Amino acid sequence: MQDQTSRPDTDHRTIFAAIAEWIRNYRGQLLTDRELAQCSPDEVAAMAQDLAISPQELRTLAHTSPDGARLLHRLLTALGVDERALSRRDPLLVRDLERLCVNCDHKRRCAHDLATGESAAHYREYCPNAYTLDMLFAAEKTSAAEKAPAEQTHG
Image (tube, rainbow, N blue to C red):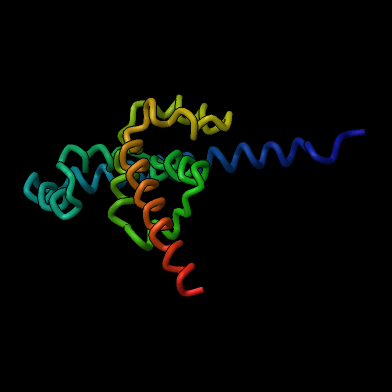
């Protein structure tokens, strides 16, 4: 009798769904590349300036898949950061974190550390966002320490 938890038709659907998602992402990336290629150098420079990045970084981002910063989102979760709250509080910071993640050369190590649960112990060794994340944690710790005495005097 066949195990119901691992049905071949379900496995095939999962594989096909992953392939279809990859194709959608690839087509979207090609479309973005084509749209950017149709822009003049001045238009590219203006867009890059609006985003506070260089034209080369804009081209790199255009070549990157839409989920290029997914490791950052997983790392934030592993570090106990409420990404939604951070995005509301400081969207530019999150954008800069994503930009550095997209351009990072250590994705394989990051993915490995995330898979093994070792990210919190090792991300400082290779993550281009380590300094910013450490500053964020220090600021949050300072803020929490400042709030605690104020709450005790009002409680």
